[in-house]
Image 1 (cartoon, one colour):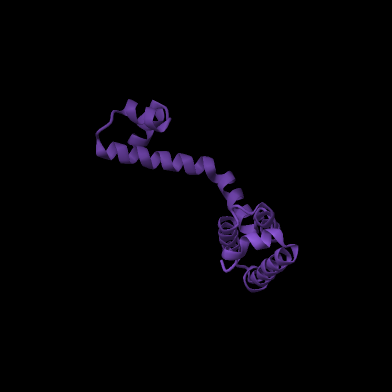
Image 2 (tube, one colour; image 1 turned 45 degrees about the vertical axis):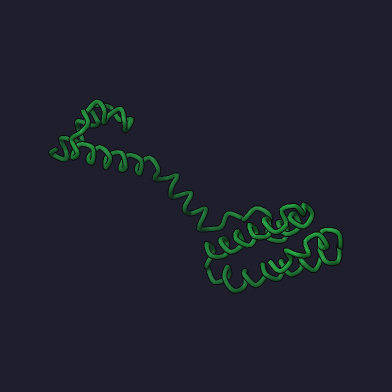
Length: 140
């Protein structure tokens, strides 16, 4: 943020741009040492993203500087182990989760008693038979 007033100079002066980029590189190294290497991947990713957003805002009209900072900060934030694991779990269980959520919605709608079985089936993309089965199982 301290570079906000000198962003035009940085854009025009390669030495100042280099100094800025070296400072950002040092920040990334420190974050890796202090956060990423201690297994705090989500925090690391969050901090990198916040820094990039601030830099994008400050250097919004400074294409060269903004691209340089983005490159130093790692370009696109890498998918970290936790992100990959979460995605795998979601992919593996998404059909089960959708079914569970739909079942809960059906139960809630049945308890409220404001909708017909046909309306519940239409609203949840379930068949009328599935709704009837849930109603029977829940004794509603």
